[in-house]
Length: 396
Image (cartoon, rainbow, N blue to C red; front, top):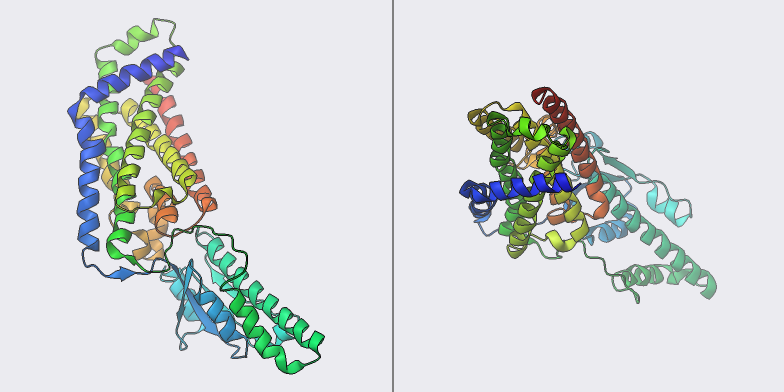
């Protein structure tokens, strides 16, 4: 373990001596974050950050308007209603990424709730999207509140032996949900007021530039590995008690440490720009660690593949442009079609962007980062195995 740490500290000292390190890791991501954030958010218009959910009422009963009011009061979803739409239209809008999900109130729903055997709401969503569970939870909360209010009003009418008080009791029960006597406050990161377009734009550009220039910053670390082989330092190191696995892990730990420190500094900078990474701090930290592990493994692979400094430059910049472009660092994937979104998620940058934006822009909870973190862990394992296999060959 001491040998691994020695190699890590040696790499960090060499990397930090190069002025280009600070250019790629701090100065450029800060500059481009401000540039893109102001460019796309400079209109000063407001934007509702809640998830758009299609709404279609096929019931038209007495209780469906009450359910609609409960849903409209959500801080996570916003209803997108168009009475001319059909279920097929909603399917297409979800497939095109224009709606996060859709809910259809089936015919006879109101009467079924009054009878105590409520029909199930029709829920349409893409199960592969991380936002699906959050929308479903909001629908369950709203429908359960309606059912509870109806049962309460029914009990009041029965106890007083006066059916005429049912409607007034129902109205009071529904109103009570707006100001319950006991409240559990859970911050969702979504203000009841629409956030400014500047803040929403920064919520995209901050993680995007952080990830893009983390890949670009691998240039210095990759060059170290190239020079280590060129000046035969690697061969001399292998004549000592230091094993190949210790050398590889030492270099990897140095890259990971450098990238994670960069992420933490840029997260702190983003927080100053009102990009609320600290809304769920453990989730943001988990995504940052998973992203740093993945990008460090990619840097290790680049370092062992490159045979010269020129190749190290090319091998660092090409992934930066390709993976960042595909992964939605330049243009949010939610603004593209479903086909490009699927292709974009071939890039680990897309998964890292999902993880960060689920917290800072979409108002989702800790559970929303597990899928992006798992995907990043898979890429980390792939890149590291390829790097270890290649390192074994070039060090023989």
